[in-house]
Image (cartoon, helix red, strand yellow):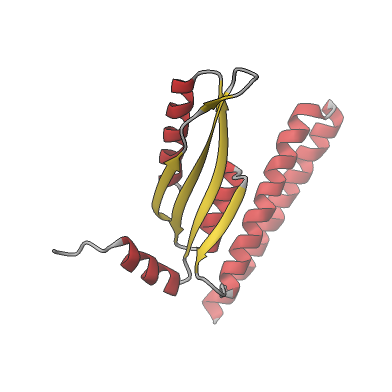
Length: 171
């Protein structure tokens, strides 16, 4: 049978190395039923291409037409990621209405590096959201101040990374 692993084997090995297997729940809406089916299928396909995704499979319910003439559906996407940070990134980018961790079943152990990566991802997403909002609603002067602060933030981040790299080299 060669080197092909079953999903069960891949999941077990990945979870033992810090990965997670989860189901993400999404709702989707469109004016046309066929468009909704295409959107849902494309959506699941995009998740499979996200960084750290080892497996993703979606189950899409048949669309139903609401009283507002809009079609709606729900999708469950089973996803196996290398780390919790990868799963968190998917959640931040795609905004599921629900998340359920299936494996590990009782406890999740994170290395300090994984915690740092997760917190940095959260910080970056928060900043990106702030930048998006500021670009839409800020007065010119406020936007210019925000950009200056962002440049200072980038410089400070660079210095922190250099310090971290220096510590890792000397360890």
